[in-house]
Length: 327
Length: 228
Image 1 (cartoon, rainbow over the protein chains, first blue to last red):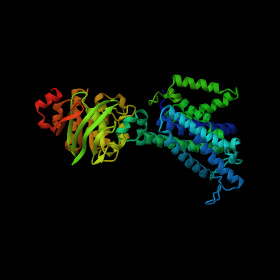
Image 2 (cartoon, chains in turn red, yellow):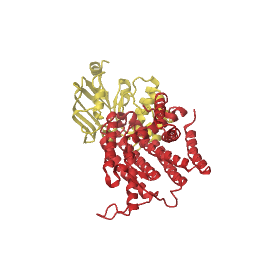
Image 3 (cartoon, rainbow over the protein chains, first blue to last red):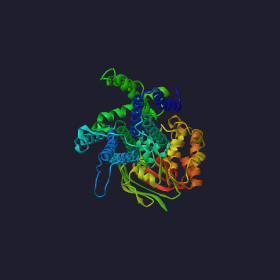
Image 4 (cartoon, each protein chain N blue to C red):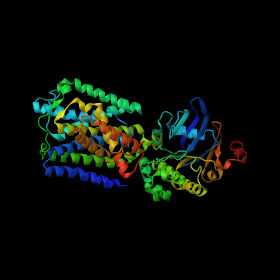
């Protein structure tokens, strides 16, 4: 068995080595592919806080991913068309600045996660899954019908938004930016898991009644986890939209919610680097098998089946052994 | 001053009534034994106090009405429960169990480990892998970490080896003498209870039938209600 810390360091090394090699070999497409993996990993790190720490099986995390995406799309669209977002009560212009877009994405998805969380956490188990899915569908169809921002066709942004001091159009620079954010989110996740809040949340996932006797409200713990989770996935949505320079209602689709969950399950639910491994494997399969067949999801399905049946801790669990119970 | 006052409390499990009228009073700094044979309502009374089941009647803690509070709010008011069967957070380590429960106050990791040195020795061990006695110490430590004003011990020495029981009774004694903590204790051993308890309340078929100073507990009373 490999020590999990060693494996995690190896994964970080891989995240740096592959683009470094691609840069030298002049393979910008590989860098873009890695950026895609890193952004997906960030979205899944978000979900892993709700799912892994809080035990909340949310099948609606694409809501936050989509909100982040549309935060970028709407702000950049107004900036590139030189039309204000609103003129009343005060003039609000669009922006091409990534930090502002990220902040908007985080604030909007935090608010959405708070409202969805308050309503969804009144239920549990399969009803929680269904209600989060229902919210996902609501946002999906709302985006389709929102003709001001492209409706079903989505919004194209011609030039990638800017970050002070960087040329974000250079693939490796944008990759670096996304990687730094991913590592920051992982650091936050690691700190959170060991904080009193994270420990109480962990206990609440396993035995809600027991945490109540020490004065903690399990619903509230789960709500906080859900909100943090939504905010991180929202930020990933903004980065994803900037990577593609395009947003569309598919960012809200339930298939995407499912994919984010698949990243977490493949890598290992509740494992710090589980989402990263899952997203890397997913993007690699998508790239390698997608070239062979349009129906490459069949192989993904087989992989998922094998992992769920034989390796309950995902790939990290298989390599490092089980750490915590996640049943 | 009265810390916990419960008067004519009734409770039911589904259609069967478990408590028909339990009254007890516990003053600040007092240690009270809740006694009775099996199935007489001791643990049900504890569940009512800790708001784990609905109850009718008067339940007051430090002058505040408990009846409408959820379990975690009652705990926040300062009722620290050591539940029957210990119920530690199995998947967390000893220290993680303690940290998860921590609330500000005089009790912290160092003080808990001073009371139960074994917990300090096993700090990074998963709670599920501890022995029964150590889990019991952890359950008490975890309740203390919430910095309670009232500690409720439900069968804290049940099923433990005599040497461990002694350690736990010694700790309860320390809590009483050094911390002046108010304690409600359920246990079957009169001999051990006598060393720490100021008063006793006896339950019989869901009713409180006898209350008084522990020293006044006559052979007749114990014979009649406890069968010893």
